[in-house]
Length: 117
Image (cartoon, rainbow, N blue to C red; front, side):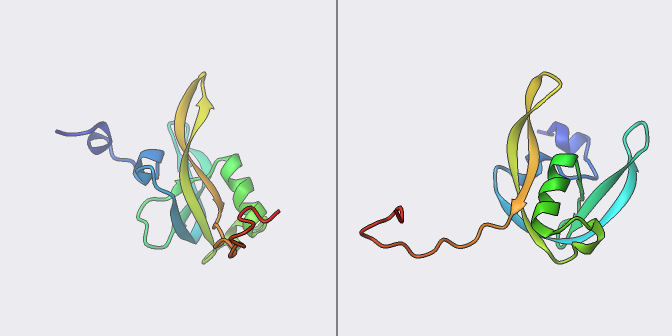
């Protein structure tokens, strides 16, 4: 049985591509491309070992900047995590891709004080 995503493939990542996983990726490059019916120029981030790019919205661009600096073109090799989150869009909650800094390995905790307080 064919899915809608298979019938109408996208050149860009969407939340369904993550399959409810958090994925660590390394930035390959950020380029501007004309997308949509209005051919609006948007930043697209491409990752090593990932065919599709991620169209950056302001939320994700600000998060990457907070993690790796304001200069988008200076991001190659820097790692981020991609995950899916429900967000409001045009009066409905829809799945969207969000980005964040790569989670650090937790420090060893004292078994007598597991919360570290």
